Length: 464
Image 1 (cartoon, rainbow, N blue to C red):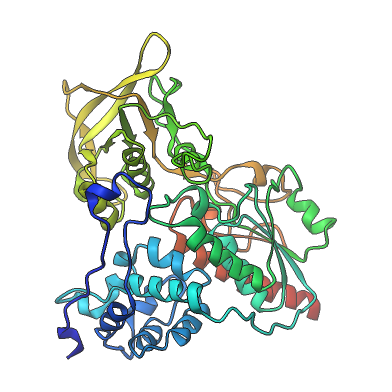
Image 2 (cartoon, rainbow, N blue to C red):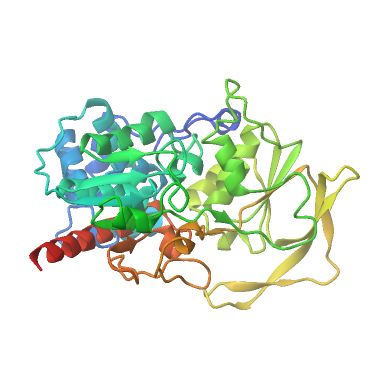
């Protein structure tokens, strides 16, 4: 029986070696491994994995094609619902989505859906049919603000429907968080991100970089002067949060956004680039999410002792289990039930340490997690030269404040319904710009939903 076949392990770099380089941690499956793992799939008639996938990839269908060795057909099936399989196969939280719903996981280990998606995506980059699909242009134009996962997914779907989709990106490279936020050792930029973005260009999507919507051009101008029929705002959530404790203005205190942007987009880890990045002998990263894991593992690879400080226990860490496991293997120190109260500086104004208090878990908060409570008289200090704040992000207010009639939440997110429609006719929004920081795949799902709504909106106007 297929469910008796043991899960095929994924080969990885040795932890002691990978902690000193920025090469990808996981090697992924080769062809034989992928086919063997695919043979574990039961091909459920009512697949729960599809229902739990935010973009509803036909998972059993593509896995059956992998099992049979028809990798082009597997790629074609995925392409109907996802334009970024190599990305999603690497960074999506499959354990709480498709794999978490796999029926094999009830009594054993689920199919490694993410690794199989990655295999198909990588195979398609290397060997797949690069012939663009035959698309009949419909003469309509849509502007997309931001080239992160939401914008890329929206542009891909609109292009396949015949729209002339133009993405406006503030940075000099497309990809949004895929470029600046996720480290090379988790998501290779040239080998994966650039190749998947190139597939969108083959669909006819135009990407204008170095264009700051709200400064270079406004959303109103895109609609009223540039002739676009609709605008999708997928600008993400790039405004970092801080704790508001004493010492946060010291030299050596940075947001995870800045730290990772320097390391990833500006390639501070590469000796061929002249990008400064401050670490010192020890780096303390405050936070427990995926961004915190990315920052602390990056600091380790830059040659520093690296410490995670988190106010709850390890069981409450919001980061992916795989990333926490990898961090532990690489020698990251975890200081759980620990909360910073002050950042300490030297006479020159640079960080010399961080003062913390020990915590214990009390009653559950609104999210259902037990609230951390300070233990009186438990203060202690951790010596360090850099403090990275990885406490989450919120949307940059630039677009909302330069667009007439766009309603926002109190915390800065754009108000939009499930289809991405905003308070302003012709303007749609989705992803982190609406929800706050979330996952790549959820942003893609929002982008796809908005693309369908934009198509209905434009077609209704034409018929009206």
